[in-house]
Length: 192
Image (cartoon, rainbow, N blue to C red; front, side):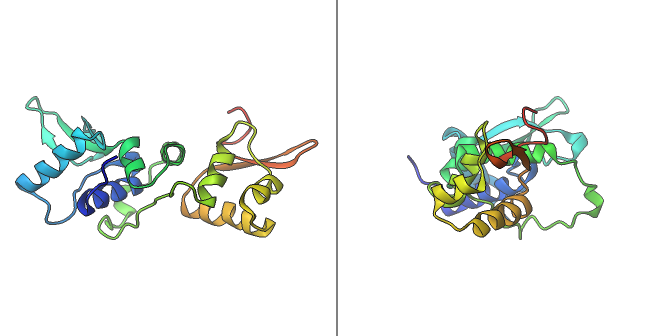
C-alpha cells in the first residue's frame, strides 16, 4: 500500500477532524497547480472523493461545474485508513458526527489551521475497546479488562474521557441481567 506524503497526511488528518470528513480548506500555501496535482493523486488512489458541494451549508468549493453548482472534497474510508484510522473507528466517527446537531457557525472560532488530528492507530488497546463497543452485544468492563490487560478504573476512564469527551463517541450503557452493565457505541437504547 502506498504511504501518504506529509502534505497528503496533513490533508487527511485535518479532514478526519471536520464534520463529514471535509478535506477543504487545503493547507495554507497549497494552491494552483500544486494543489491540483496533490488532490489529483489522492483522488486516483481513492483517498479523496469529489462530491457535490452543499452551498447552503457554506461548504468550501473545490471547483465549479459550470451550471451554478460546485464540488467539494471529502476523505474516504480508504484515505482515513491510509493515515492509521481503522475503518471501524472511521465509521464510528462518521456516525457520531451525523448524530450531533450542527452548532451555529457564527459562534465557532475558525481554528482549522490549529485543529488536532484524530487518529486511532490499528492494533492499539483503544482501537480494541472501540471494536468491542461496536459489537451488537457490546462489552462489559470485565471483558475489556481481560482483552486489554488494563485495570477496571483505566477502562472506565478511557470510556468517559478519551472515547466520550475527546472523540465524541455516543456510548450507551445498559444493565443486562447475568452480565452487569454493558457498554456499546450507540444512540440510546439497544437496537436503535
